[in-house]
Image 1: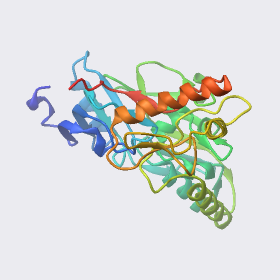
Image 2: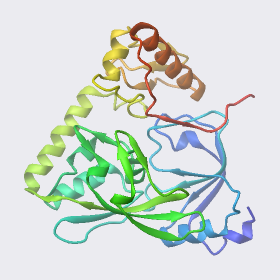
Image 3: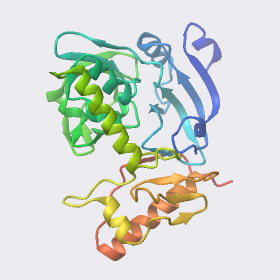
Length: 300
């Protein structure tokens, strides 16, 4: 990428950036290029200047993600803390840019007296990531709230789409290809601000009591199979506390893998596969990953 091509832009471009700094597991090799846009307009300008064959990877808070030790070839677009505008547009709607954390959305909606978004406080990622996978917890799902989205293609063109243009289900979303989420309009119901803030607080307390929030993790590793829970299957297979290197199946919640200090991405990936193998061997059920694994294997 030519240095002079990015001079007019207002964002921050880094080269050979360690992804361990930007993932909640605290692991991952370097990204060739790492761009933090100043805002949506700046992002559009940056994308317009990229070569057509430049691989792109969009990153939020780095949860639900395992970056391999060999890192990421191409350019990472980092939205967290950058695409961070959030506004109530009328009585029942809130517009949120993709880099806003789900927890902030939950708090904002509660303070505004808008009900329906409380479950978002338990999702450790950004709205962009939640939209991409229909993230959910505590019985709620992201796309049940979506009225419309704004997306951007790799030339930097912005496009609006209604929720009806997408197919979504449990941890699954499909829609226009070659476009990425830059903002969403959520449709909510009127509620009592004090009651909603209290509900958020209780959900966060529940999360803290049942999940290893004090240790580096990426959220739930596996999807729940229909009619069952991944955590129950893993625990009943006797896998709590199982370790490979410094990656460990959490003693607190069996569907979490924690970095107990100094784990590599290869440790975590090997442990994921070991858990899948043992659950299949003991229960006959093939667990499907919820965590996305990206990047290159380190052959060094």
